[in-house]
Amino acid sequence: MEESVLKNIPTKKGVYLFKDKKGNVLYVGKAVNLKERIRQHFRSKNPKIQKLLETASDIEYIVLDSEAEALLKEAELIKKFDPLFNQLLRDDTQYFYVGFTKEIYPKIFVTHQPHKYTAEFIGPFTEGQALKKILKIIRQEIPFCTCLKPHLSTCLNAHLGLCYGWCCKKNEIGDKDLYSENIRKIKEILSGNLKTIKKKLLKELKNFLLKDEIEKASRIKNQIIAINKILEQTNLIKSFNKEEEKINILKVLKDLKDLLHLDKIPYFIEAYDISHHSGKEKVGIRVVFKEGKYDKSNLRKFRIKTIIKPDDPRMIYEVLKRRFNHPEWGTPDLILIDGGKTQLKFAIEALKEAGVEDKIKVIAYAKPNQLLFYNLQKDPLKLEDLPYNLRSFIKSIDKIAHRAVIKYHRQLKERKLK
Image 1 (spheres, rainbow, N blue to C red):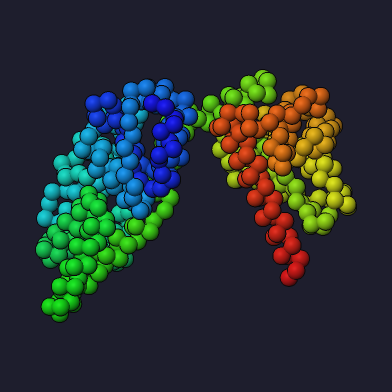
Image 2 (image 1 turned 90 degrees about the vertical axis):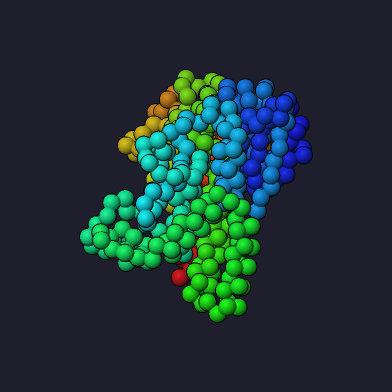
């Protein structure tokens, strides 16, 4: 399959299906942005994904309006087709299922080992945290029980209005029909089209109101509220599963090592940026990336002390000199400076004076011209000539450093105005 198929894929939420020549479904996935997610497949170095692309001959997609709908539709299609590559790309223990115990007041739980329980299950779901978030929203409007063992005292969930109390209390009898209706609605929400269910509920609400059955109408209204809240949720879908993410990050770091002729893979990267307003409120920032991921806990802020006039290269020099007064912060494999050749020159001078020039590689990224300076004696690299994932990684590092320094600069300005 060629990457040219992307031109027909929309940039909308939904699910997608890779199919072979006979129309058999090979893989089902979901996405916040269908085009970008499928593009990630084409650029993946995962051998299993490369095999999928070799086997597939067609892509089908379904556009949906929310991340929750995509999450639920994906689960429905995986259960229906049991695609080969969904099995190959994800270990069975990583799928999540919602279980309903078989008792008078069924208890609801989430597991990735359904074979260990005697219960009815809905799934498989690929996002455990998203699934739990949806269940939490449902429970706020449609109470259900999660206590797997009966107890004598009223549980905390009952006090919070998340269950009825009698559903998990020993020797208690409650409204079985009410609880059964809640369970039925929850199964319907987790298994079906949310907008279709909502239309059906609105019709039921109207009928109960016409009959002046206020209590029933109130319960239906709560169910509609739950569906609305679910439909509004974002950040339910991850861009990559963990396996893919690790493979892609490692590949980027290896590419960076090869590009810069480093002795080892740069697992510990620092990035620096400067901000000021005509030489006032001068600040610098240090951000850290470990194994390719931003480590917010190691962010460090600097107020420039020795430079009076606007002079970014010398400010970089000061920040780095002060940084290397802290050996307890560790020794990075690579330092990225925001700037061009002059900033690189001053950064290298700071490393020389700190006695770490031979231990740490320093590079500078000049945003305006999209150039990467890595050697004072050589021409810079054009970012557009680098592999897509590598240039995206470099840009993301610089962007995080830039946002952090701008935020710190604004905080100082606001503090001064007070």
